[in-house]
Amino acid sequence: MDRLHRFAFLVVAALMPLTAVAEQPRVCFDMPYAVACRDVTPAEYTASHPGYKLMEVKLEISSLLMAGQEKDLTQYLIRVDSPQRTLTVADYLPKTKHEAIASSVTKEDSTERALALGINLSGKYELLTVPGPSAGIGAKKTSSVKTELLPPLETVAASGTLDRASVVFFKIKSSPRNLLEGTREYALVLRVATNWRADYLRVHCEAEGVRRNMISSFDEETKCGQRDFVVALYQDGDEDARRIAENFARREAAKMAQSSASNVQGRNATPWAALQR
Image 1: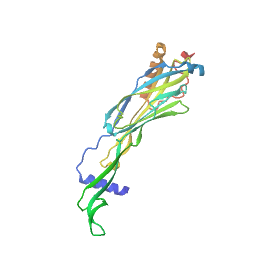
Image 2: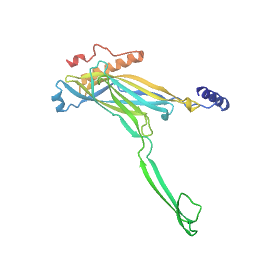
Image 3: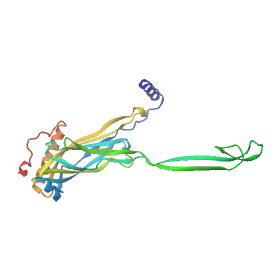
Image 4: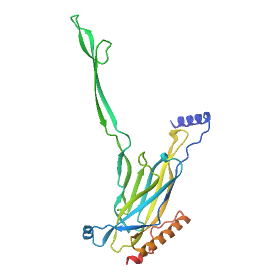
């Protein structure tokens, strides 16, 4: 079958005029250097988890389609982790979501009987009830029952945690009602020590799409954009922590720009280590 496809491709390519193949999509991601975190610890949590508090962080990730078409984007994969495993994910949004991609389906069952003029065994004329269409003369009655069937559900967003809740992932799929380009917000609730003032996250963003070919059977899934970010976190209202966190994030961004192999995992000390004492 593969050989047949290759032969068909060569024949079509030789006979048809050269036309421009749709450009492969190319996506660019962006994020802020630092994000303020809000204390959302309820009183009952403090009582049941002494020494810990809950901090809410909202990560805004922007994406711009630099080339290609939106319809050729298939999904985004967002992975957020705590390199030093100092942060634990207690909750997150968006959750896994399913929706109906197609519209509702109507199923119709119909029965049809016709009254036709016929001859009985005694040779007399009488009205006979016969199934289906008839060539005789008479009236036709039709009845039908319509049933609305729910369309199948498809996953448009999948999310969850990994590595004992030190990592959270989001897989956002494209659909006619769920376009990918633009700014999306991902919310996390992190469990931290009560003296927590600042920390950082590593965010990996990846876009997947379809590379179109002259023959649709040769279309293939491809990676069409990715970027890694170091995002510093600080407690809202703590100006010292904000200043240190932003400077740290900017320095890490410069290092990552110089070398794509830069890895922040395993760092022994951070600029705000003294703040948590």
